[in-house]
Image 1 (cartoon, rainbow, N blue to C red):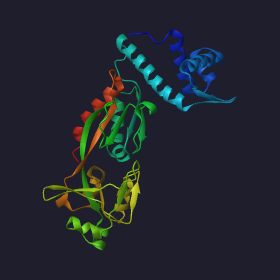
Image 2 (cartoon, one colour; image 1 turned 90 degrees about the horizontal axis):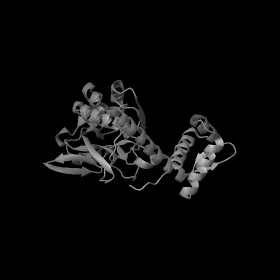
Image 3 (cartoon, rainbow, N blue to C red; image 1 turned 60 degrees about the vertical axis):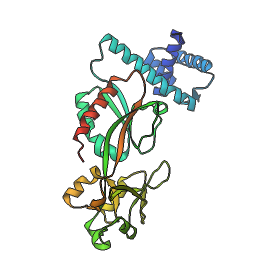
Image 4 (cartoon, rainbow, N blue to C red; image 1 turned 180 degrees about the vertical axis):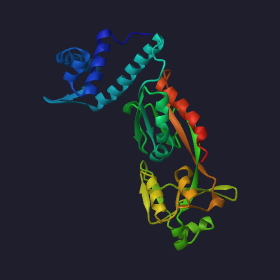
Amino acid sequence: MKRHFDDIQLGSIELFCLAAEEGSFTAAALSAGVTPAAVSRSISRLEERLGTRLFVRTTRSIRLTEGGRSYFEQCRQALTQLVEAEREVMGKQLEPSGELRISIPTTYGHYRILPLLSRFRARHPGVRIDIHLSNRNIDFVGEGYDLAIRVRAQPDSTLIARHLEDARLVVVATQEYLARAGTPQTLDDLEQHDCIQYELPSSGRRISWLFNEGGKEREILAAGNYCCSDDVLGGVTLAKHGAGLFQTYRFIVEKELEEGSLVEVLPAFAGRSRPFTLLYPHGRHVPLRLRAFIDFLMECKREWRV
């Protein structure tokens, strides 16, 4: 393998990452045990080598440029992998450690993943977890994420996909709403009801409701006077307060169905689901903390019967 970096260049990359993390050349210098001038010179050499500015400098502060932020995220991951590889060779990393950055849809986070994290950390107390709860797609490299969970994940040769579950769908409403508006008996009856909609934030498209009818799959773009975007739980809250019908994941409303505060509507047409997939970057080196978390989720998914 051809050598691309000398010791000075690698040192400059480390000082650059320190400055980006600390937000200050002086703080980076104190952390590294060198002078602020040495940090400034190292970063100037790095910028000259790359042919681009990494920081916007003022007399009081520094901030990463757009290119600097992208370079920082990739350098930070590379340096972390070097440290972990060294620890593994030396036999020192017997337990997972370090920061794990995960991105999860809001509903799946609240009802599936977040309740498990204290159990994971009880096993692996050296792991710190940074959780991003959002329904938008993330940039693994640019934003420095280790793992994401998504619905209907698109094929991507740069990512490894592991199936978590097919989450069952259910249409729910309150007894109060059904007493007022009537209980639908067929799918065509939905035209006469307030069907709460959910709009995908990425595309602005409203999600169809999924059913089985006569052994065939059917999609219906139901209509009503309410539409939520970004957070599916808004539709659940509306349904719980008598605003109308809502199709959601059964695991979200299982407690309410058991207690009777919500009831299932059109059960004869149920049975459809949506897949949840775990995604992480394709690479030869998977950090021990990430391997441990993936194994933990694969173990826990056996508990998800709803």
